[in-house]
Figure 1 (spheres, rainbow, N blue to C red):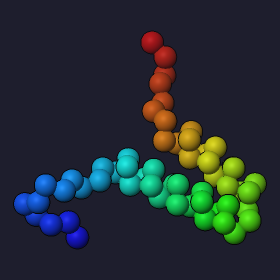
Figure 2: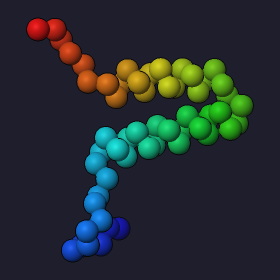
Figure 3: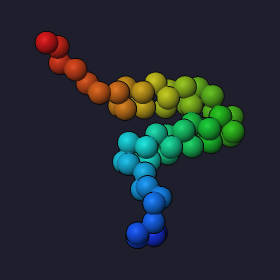
Figure 4: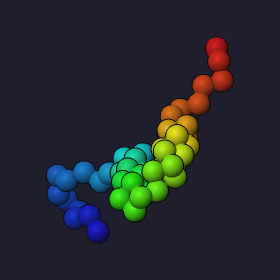
Length: 55
C-alpha cells in the first residue's frame, strides 16, 4: 500500500481516525441527516479528545 524507502509518511492512526470521522460526518450531511451528523460529531469529539482524570 505504501512504498518502502520513499520519503512519504504513513498516516498515523489518529490522523486516519480523524479523516474517517470527517468523511462520515460529510456523508451524513450530504444525505440530509443533519441531526445524525451533529450527534455523530459530538460523540466523535468526545472520543477523540484525550481524557484527563484530574491532577
